Length: 146
Image 1 (tube, rainbow, N blue to C red):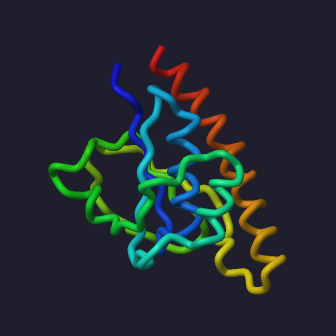
Image 2: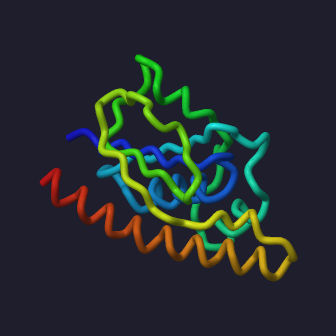
């Protein structure tokens, strides 16, 4: 049985899409494989997101910012679902390998917050939101593959 391939997109691929990738890869087991990318990827992942992942026991090793074109190439893994995070247009009109479903999750960018406490709270809120949605996604994918 092949895993569902899910790509999370956000403009900079520095915080919420990387967190979603890490959470889904931990929770998805053999059912789902996650990737993430952006159209203007950051140079490095946001330290708040990586720190939070580690604090909550979600593996963060190997997370890095990527451009969406890596996943639109003919030799890219076929995608079952592309999840656009946030309200910014990202990679619109792209023909993805595998002709995946494209869905939108309105999740605010926690990196947009300023101030240490506000930023930490925003990252935790986004993590919790992503974790809830990903739990549902994993259950749904598991039933669909059974």
